[in-house]
View 1 (cartoon, helix red, strand yellow):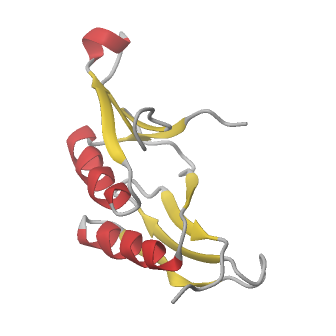
View 2 (cartoon, one colour):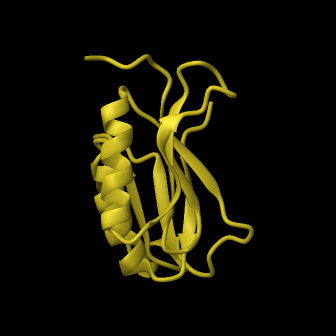
Length: 130
């Protein structure tokens, strides 16, 4: 079981703003932030559902190749909200909201590239609800 993961971003403030907006659409909040004086090297910010962050960004040279991280959400409307929020926050579309039936019949996801090129996804595995 994965406890937490994250990516390295080239511009910490821009990355933080992007993730606050994009992940806010799926119910995540920025829960923690520590400067280099605490980490011993670079600033970091942790996002998640209270009380514990499970996704972190850190300042530095962005990961290459870029990382893919998928966030599971409860419904397809949240996938669409994530995609819209991520684009409005400066992300670029890497796959609009829709079914990816080649994975399974109810795989509904949307993909965006964050400002550093990381492929960030919101995915719902449930059928459409009214």
